[in-house]
Length: 209
Image (tube, rainbow, N blue to C red):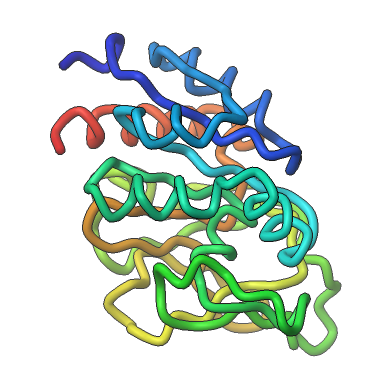
């Protein structure tokens, strides 16, 4: 299967940056299906879960549309899966931002608010990614700057799930993954050519699985 023929489904659940993610993937040659239909997520060759806003709101919208189960089914059946921004955070068990709102629980750990001394919260702007465990989706991106907008960050329970970190009053997990799953806290679609490179990497990795 070539990258051009890969059918990538972007989960549409009224949670923000879906159109810009779709356009970035299309620029890299993917055949993109932006859909609110859980059945189409389950039938995709690869899945991208974007997200902006509050953790609890995103989880509520996923559940209301049946997308929580569809995303879990896609992951557990081995489909290449990419989470972006809050699409990373909801893969964990829960968040300080929304007490009582459970996440998808794919990755053990929780999401916490920044405690960074004199640094401003939210963490907003460009920051350099340090790849700590090689992954095809992050190939060639060590030391590159990506665009961030967030007040909370994940703390994985398993260190082996951490793929990349960024320093902001201390190092935090900015990329995580295991098996057929990779997710990033930053916005590739707002990160110029390096963001497009990440989406290109994802397409070639998805093709190989």
